Image (cartoon, rainbow, N blue to C red; front, side, top):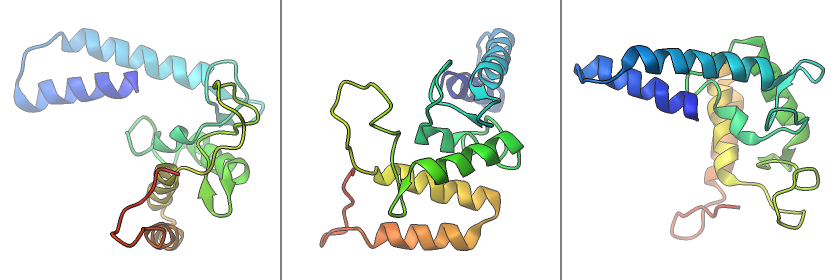
Length: 153
């Protein structure tokens, strides 16, 4: 998300003719992008991972294409989405991460996060898997309560 912040700062300055150290921001943005692509992608697993040196997935990786970090067509993004489908989807909904494997200070067993499942629907659209996106989106909407609200989990 540090890359996203710098990317949006650069784009905002450019779009609105504002002042800012744009060349420095571009350089740092490029540095972060290169570092994440080098150290955040596990070549053995063939996917991006939760953190440098980790083997674990995190559903936030589904936002790589929607933020513009990499296009959905990038093989690394496609393989990451495939891995998330295999390892983090439970009963058709997306877990944020494997609570049995990630030390977050909470006991294992947390449920699926609705927001993460919407991220997967977005990723499907960007991959051109529109029918799957639509089906997942409809399923998620069906989870609303009597006043149309969705819970976090």
